[in-house]
Image 1 (tube, helix red, strand yellow):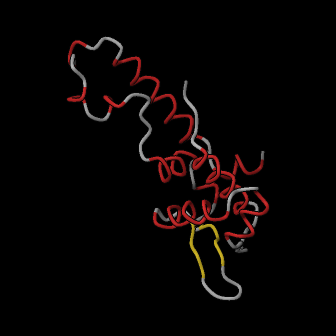
Image 2 (spheres, one colour):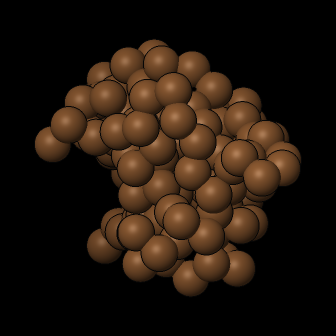
Length: 133
């Protein structure tokens, strides 16, 4: 029913790779090769992670990507939301007006509970924990 997109899976793989390289950079090509991710696809993912402040980049001969902060301080929710935006199992959670029944929607509390459970789980897991297995 619910599944993480390929982009999110690739972002998590790239981030866990960087988390295992404290104080070192890795090029997008290197990350793509070691994580079996299409290089062009990964470049867009890394650009998004940079815009959201999760990674930093450096140009030049010894350039590449590195963690912007300690992996222990990055939640998996931050990574997922950087790639996908806010989690919403159904569209009406974000915009009630898209629902024809609005106030009469009995399953709404179920969907909110599911969203909250997913958000809580992802926010409690740090990148460091995931990268260590």
